[in-house]
Length: 323
Image 1: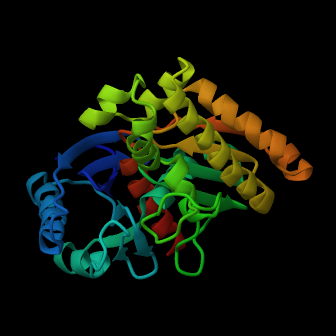
Image 2: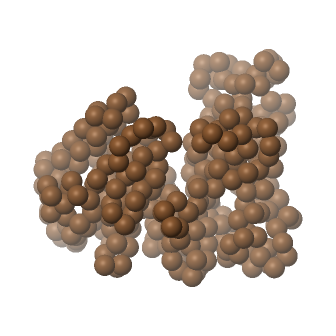
């Protein structure tokens, strides 16, 4: 595949799929390919990832491509050494040495980071984050995490673990979290956490309009919020706990980090009324000075279908700028 303008290859490794694509410097995805990922064993996981990369690079025969490939992946990443250290979802996994393996085979430089850091860079380079030197990108999906931008730089922390806000304390005696705690934001406000609560509390609300979807395993967070709007008691309880827990989490971030903006991404927050309700909570409870400095809480404009590829490509650009 030859393109007139130079492109960067981005690889988005998620828990359900692998996306590999070619992205221009203006942030246009000119080609992408979806591959299956197999989490059933560590060997099959590695094979599915490396076979996908081989297919794209060898069979697509991409030309006019930049020297660095960006890879965004769920879980913990050693950014400095280009290694995927694992994930709570994959206990006991040995680290994957992406930079070492792929440099040796293909000759590219390799930039690797977690998917939310990658999406935050996409906001910095291509999204609403271009307007701000200090902002938060908060991803609310199956889990919850944030990217922190301070003075125009992504904050990674000592172990590249900055932004894991899904595991901050919001309330005692909640459901057990996969991290081992019983008070995490993620158990109340993530898509996975809310679906778990819907299943657990259905016996107390057998007449809920969500009952059939819960029993069939097809309920999603959007169903819960829209049922709450219609007055469903079960959905209303989950909705209120979402606003309380997510609101506390964001208030703490505002008071500690003093951002100019919070940009919300992920699949859970899709309705303007819900964002308005959450924003009202934050502005009502945050301290006066950081609340006054917070210009907006808004949705990302980067589409969920492409943000992973855009973020991975931005990782490559960021890595080249740093080196």
